[in-house]
Amino acid sequence: MIKHRVAVLISGNGSNLQALIDAANQPDYPAQIMLIISNKTDAYGVTRAKNAGIAAHVINHKDYSTREEFDNTLNKILKQYSIEFVCLAGFMRILSDGFVNEWRGRMLNIHPSLLPDFKGAHAVRDALAAGVKEVGCTVHLVTEEMDAGEIIAQARVPVFADDTVEKLHNRIHEQEHKLYPHALKILINNK
Ligand code: GRF
Image 1: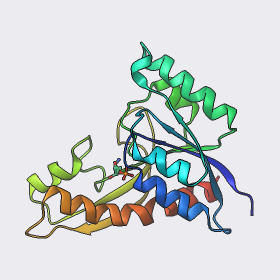
Image 2: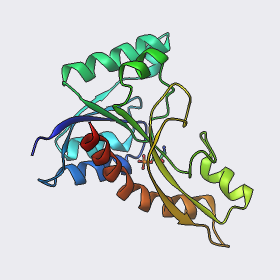
Image 3: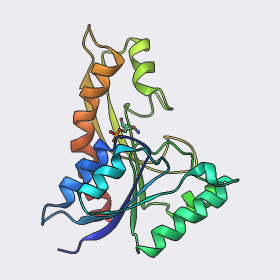
């Protein structure tokens, strides 16, 4: 079994990162998480990376005057580790067109809605406010347009009458943790 080299980019808690680490620890999973990059020093995902013995780099976007310079630094590190696939997992930065182009077809994102519904940073809140009966999560290829690339996999989640944004997001997270490893495997196996 060839294990392809994957980097995960995060900004926060990193529960999806954890799901990918756990999946990749299985001998028959076709990927290994080689590198974690966070743009936030205090992201709990950085601790998860350290606990798992995986290289973690913090690149603070505030240290860079342009998006391109920040993205060039990302790219340099990804190259250093010979990364083949990139997973965005709660990474709260918009990437430049050049970076997206470089990783086209090899970079995934996870979003907490049934895309194309409820794009953007407040998907769960917006879905709840819209009163829909069903939400979900989507893993898609990253393209220049936010939350709009080819869909690789989706999972559905029911909305209950007493849901809050937090309760609903927790229920979505449970599905995300199964969906992301599944979608990454699909992408790798289709290459
Ligand atoms: C997830 O809900 C994901 O869909 C969204 O950001 C959240 C990240 O959660 N893009 P975590 O950091 O993986 O726990």
